[in-house]
Length: 355
Image (cartoon, helix red, strand yellow):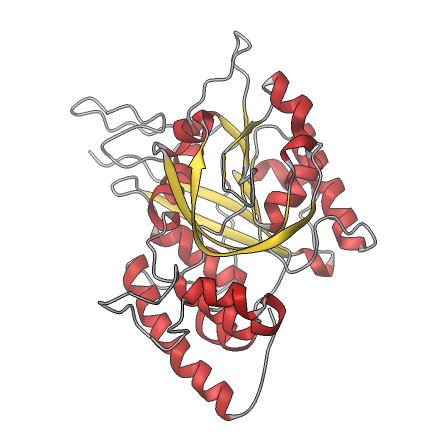
């Protein structure tokens, strides 16, 4: 039997913008996240998704009395520093996130890159400038908590950041077990945090379904084409050594993934955002593939029940453009080719753009 229909409602807190060829080919944050969620719906789940986007930089915030209508809020990346309290919208977002976690615990929260940093601040952490950039696919050594959420020992995600959240800023929270680290890399020991719901016994049950807050320094929603486009647009800001480390000595000469990857740096390394991370996010919301439940337990034969989420989701359809239902990987391969063409056109016109 087909499980009953399930609608997940997501509040997307857009804190940055894309521009130039990257935006022309891939769209803005709303389009990218819409495609990410809609193209990764677990098979056989009979789930659908509604995304309401809010332009945080323009001081657009959800109404307080409607927050519990959402299953999850996601905080996007941004070129703005998450520790710059001189910016009004950063201060307002920080206050909003503190209130969301404290007063609306049934609504889950996920922060990506800048989102990771600002959510960490809302939970008592700090954000500072790192000594170096991390750009492109980076392997993350997962903690025990990270392994329990993602089901693997290592996670590779697209990265494009220099600010980071020091582990030391969460020392008290880590000691008490209130917050746990996702994992670490050499330059960035804190690659994300997890806040589990406490159980009746007081000990957290460390499964995706029991995650209250999840943050990631990396970008599960970004493809190779997006990262390469951002690198092209910001070569001067990143510096040639950092850029060369990303795409190797062959530079950005390839429009499509080559058979021979020698000299192409880490640009074409496989990432886990479209499969492992997306499925963990869906399990957080109680939606899993038809073969397992949201706790990664195999379903008994004939069991077609669907786990419900306490918060629920109202059927209020946003008026934004709907992205097509083509597969995630083939869609990104097509746009990567278009990205190469658009980049050439931008160069012909002598135009530069910034993320």
